[in-house]
Image 1 (tube, rainbow, N blue to C red):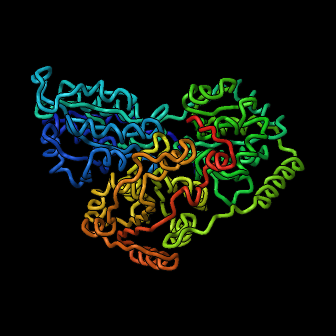
Image 2 (cartoon, rainbow, N blue to C red):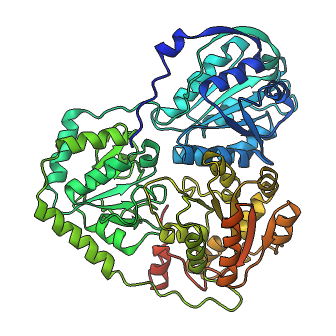
Image 3 (cartoon, rainbow, N blue to C red):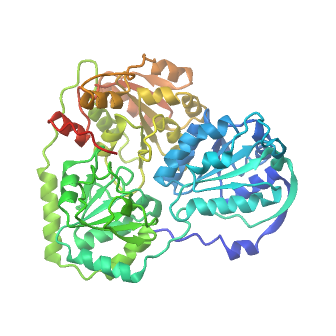
Length: 588
């Protein structure tokens, strides 16, 4: 079901506004409540003490989730936003808090994820004095947010919050920061606030594309001999699943997704080609896109990784781009004709302009895709070295165990990403798979699984991490245990910074440097944080442990020894080309 644009923001809500008095901190909390904030992720600091005092009496309205690190708090809010379809909220304080959160905001900004960042700052009178934690927050946030609102009067706080939320959720979504000095949080004021409403829903608006451009694009699709769709994360933001399926059916087009777009079409669709690109992409999706004469790119930047260095689709194809940001695709495909607007709305416009399909043509294209899928030879996976389990077998076993539960899987960069992109089954159109490919930040999966669990209360969440990522985020295992969330963490351990070591193996003649840290006993650390933990050594043992998690939905950490990528190469097409003799390193 396609959602409608939210209707409770605007004149109607403003008509219900009423003056509210209190400290700036109280006005800030009240503004958050009235935008629809139900939970926020953060870490307290000196400059935010008044804000936390205001939260103390509002726990029935807002649940505060204490993270162990501000970057991880941002990852929690990021995954909450991806899975819930509503903006996530993260709170930080001046100095270390704001500087730490930048890494988490960078991923959200690159991936178009709506976040509201509430940042407290030093006292206004201390500006320019070199005060403890002083930093130019507006400049600091500039590279990783759409907008920054610096509030210097308590009465201005609500309006700034509402404006920030609107910015975060309209157009191309992204993080937006509201910066409030600590003395403004203590200042008493009266401000007008509208009635409660869910202003966090995405998209905030659903703009249409110009009808003349839509008609032209529809004619091109109808005339295409080999049409294809390349679908990205924007389809999830717009919940344009029905529209994507309608377009594919009407023109007989195969649908490939980027990693961010995985889940936009279920595997059982006759038009599904799976994930494409240079990180878990399949040969069938690559070849189909490379051969297409007309490619409809929906909600994707179509960068070098998504297109395997612009080979699929080729730059000679007739590219039609549907995107809320008209400049995104044309940066990589300058010849693209752009339909700027909301994906669900614009695709609906295109469907309305398409002529009635020729049944024999559609059937022939359906048979072509079926034959390609049937003819796809199974990839030969070498037997893993003794004492290790193949990554593919681990992913398959976990996916089978949680099948039918509408579980969310969150994958870290490195070994988890290509395996999830390639093998995790999609049984329904939904954002059930989260892989952070804006920047590919290590240490994302464990904290992000917490946000995903709050976005889908009661649903199991699987976090696939690796030993390098584990070392960056293991403090959040205590958060998982404290909140008693239904999270299964599976660590793929190869005792190295495996992705970088593989690059050195392929492209630097095996000169390994800086990629072999010492071991950490992840099971002991997980247990010290309050989790059940084990180290299964067989696939059968792994299945038994996962079955226990499925039964009781209690947090569980499993550390699994897997082969190094050098020994069993993951589904990264450029790496397989390198092993076959093409040592040209792909350009990101």
